[in-house]
Image (cartoon, rainbow, N blue to C red; front, top):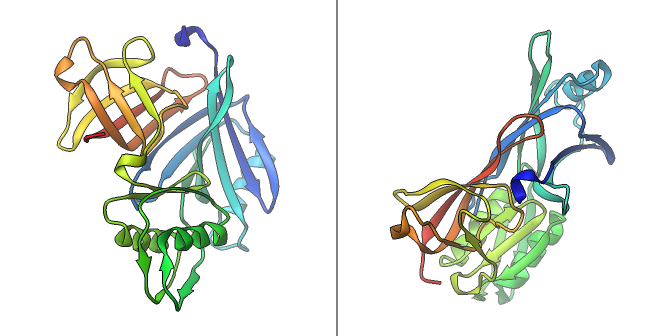
Length: 270
């Protein structure tokens, strides 16, 4: 039934607090999200934007002009259940193609932020440290991780460095940013469990990888990076079982064929 449900795709570019929304032009979005300290990324292609907006995007991403506070939000979904957020990140570069169909290509990344300091002279738990990082970068904290107590914690650095150090303090946990949320998830505390099979969007046959399994599915917002999933394949049942999603590649278009996730998952005891 999902295949006959009209797709939705929306790109919002926010510049210094003012939002510009794109839905009715040709849009292609691709990128990757990771349940690790690797920064999420997205490439957005929009064709035949009006000349004024095209010039504006090029100016706010120029490394030679005044710095603008810019970020991009990509949302996707189906007509029956509306939009959900796929990606939020900083817009840091753009370029344009030649005529006749002029395409603006925008590169985006998470964690492209200024440095902050985190200093605790007394014994502090990791949940408090994570909460302070989230607060300073205006993120929501999703803490389902273990808790450790740390003496004299001090770090000055950007968001990626802050996350890397927090992950070092919690080596058995997944520490990562997805959209506007800082996630700290212990293996036994991941609580979503999505079943992937031919009836709910699986495309083709799942395959073994060096890390676990790879499978392609139609876009579904219930699939979460860092959370649990179950594969049920009739053609390749040897892969059936529980996995942890550690990477999501997304390929979304509003006028072309692609509208799917490629899931990379680890085989884990859940």
